[in-house]
Length: 187
Image (cartoon, rainbow, N blue to C red; front, side, top):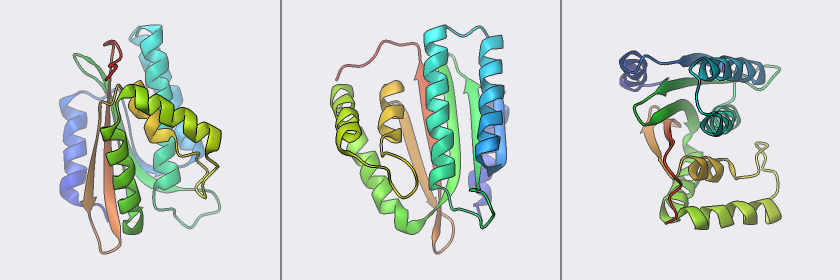
């Protein structure tokens, strides 16, 4: 069960920022495709610069797939997990927020990945990305381990995580990614 204060905070964010696209419920490959269609349409309607639009879309794909891949899976015929997604415009660009439940046994690994990303500059992240592509394999969850690195590069390391323990074996992970039109940060 997701803590009501955590859910309330995300919904307050939606209201405050007049969210462009939101979703709360079951994440499947089909629902992700629908979210991406709505987001792409909304970005196009707002006449967002093409380079920024591609960056937003690429980060959206990674962020939404992370919810599906790493969230606690429901016991259905197809891969399904519960989550929350918000896309909204800011004065500086766009913000993407996702939230989902994960098993507490996965929290230490996630914290280690977050620490690794925050300690590297953009150049080091790009090298880590290339290295993982060369030497990494596909994980049990279907990823190559580059999603967070890729999002950090595209967002110029402008991402934050909050992890809230909700039950004995479950935590809620909230990821916030800010994408701006600023030039890339080199260090």
